[in-house]
Image (cartoon, rainbow, N blue to C red):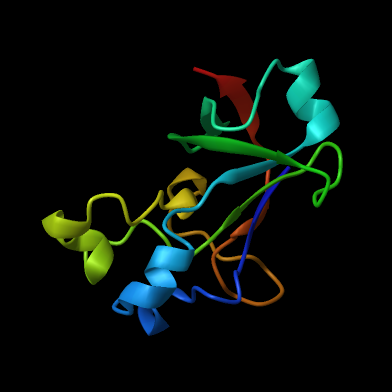
Length: 126
């Protein structure tokens, strides 16, 4: 199960033009529980592929105890073509746009927003 979350220092359009804040959180990583990571032979900094029924994206793994076993997560608000992330001078800044793994044009029934949380996913080391 995958879900997006927000970092305090990065809130996409509010901060992606702020060099100091982007430097603190240069990119987003895929959070994976340390036990799950060990079972999949995934270590800190390994490239992984996150797949859903609607798409896939390649990212970098960050095993942590800060996420439950069986759950994957990644900070949202990265992967823009505008702001500092889209500037060729700052290629190290920016990350992946994890909503690319969700079903397009599908709103969840309760809130009416697109589903950014609880996406059925599979992760594998590249």
